[in-house]
Amino acid sequence: MENVIGADATPVLEAVRDALVDVVASRPRECPPVRVAVALSGGRDSIALLDAFACIARDYRIELSALHVHHGLSASAEAWAAFCLAECKKRDVPLVVDRVQVERRGGMSLEATARAARYSAFAAVDADFIALAHHADDQAETVLLQLLRGAGPHGLAAMPAQRATRPGPVLLRPLLALPRSAIDAYAKARALAWVDDESNADTDVRRNFIRHEIAPRLAAAFPGYPATLARSAAHQAESAALIDELAAQDAASATLADPVAGLVLDRVALVALASSAPHRARNLLRWFLRQHHLRAPSTARLEAMHDQLVRAAPDARVRLAHCGAEIGIHRNRIIVHSPTIGAFEIPWRGEPRLALPHGTLEFAADPGNATAPRAALPGHDVVVRARSGGERVQFGQRAPTRALKRVLQEAGMPHWLRDSLPLVFCGGTLAVVPGIGVAFAFHAAPGAAGYVVNWRPTPPGA
Image 1 (cartoon, rainbow, N blue to C red):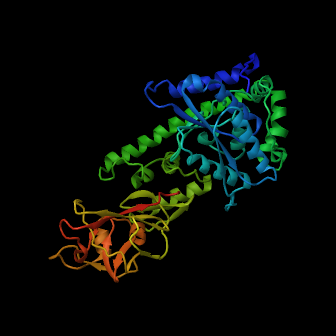
Image 2: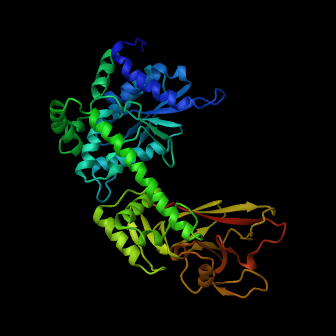
Image 3: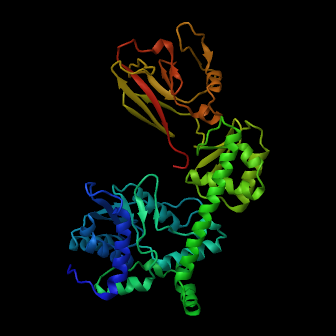
């Protein structure tokens, strides 16, 4: 494509250039090029972003690629993928087409479900950054949607210009400060082609209703729109950062009074909630959930959570389900954990990793060098299952045979971990308790080959 840059294209190019400068400024020249993947739908905004990156990527040592998420929701989906491929070929940019399954989830709209699938695809991309084409009009629409949902400062902060994800690349929005009109001008100046998603005209979708019915009236009545709402989002982002700092201080002060807890993100001392004013306790609870990448509950749900937690006994079996995770109490601490699962029994046939419903059990073969307890397992007649009750184990030659339940309690293991801990049985006898030890009868002899068994549970909410 001819690389002729007109004056109307300058704001977009400068925005992308500024984003690139921020990205590469701290990287020494000897570092590999920064890998940026443009999220390419084929629409005007993402095509403009792809084109702008292609124009200047070489000057900034950017290894540029593109990702097209194929949702399969439109009859035009295949045509859009083909169009994106052609546009990338014009610019010598490699493209990955990721075909995702969009399945409705309880309480989620089709739009929200498709967005979740899209961001899941982003997380799997092998790049440093995913560049998204959101602009100031998108930001203003998001602020309005969040207002109408009754969101607080974190919701009203809308979309950040950069956001680290776990796992996956950093999300980068170089065009967030520019209005849609600047993207239009760029597309015209560069004579770009793009596709139109017919679903964008459906005003039954709330964002489309705001875009087509509300935003034009706001722009006519308030000349500063959308920049004023984008600026408001930036103010809310600062407020959100301040209340997060307050929550972290509240958590730290409770930790100092209870040094056993340690200042860790996976738990908060119950006293921090019980001793705080209600508004600060709710703020702390929201912050705590965000540390686990869980969205904030509704106001009513948050108040119910707070009430149940502060009224519970120190080790009550509290199980508050939220966003695919559970919140419980252990030793006066509030902990987010994966849901407790039911009974399971899976044979092990010598594979290095055994997939379980709630994580992965690793069998690391060791020739006799490991200092950790090693198990001599035959690779047959071995099953992995949860506790069923009454299990007993002997860890030392002269040690007594003890009830596994008592062993796990003394190890300080919360009840939800005890209930779902995968146990390794050989010939019907308990051989390995991951994280605790190997039964004496199954110890590998010194210098002999054996297995070190490690349990990798699925993170809460994953």
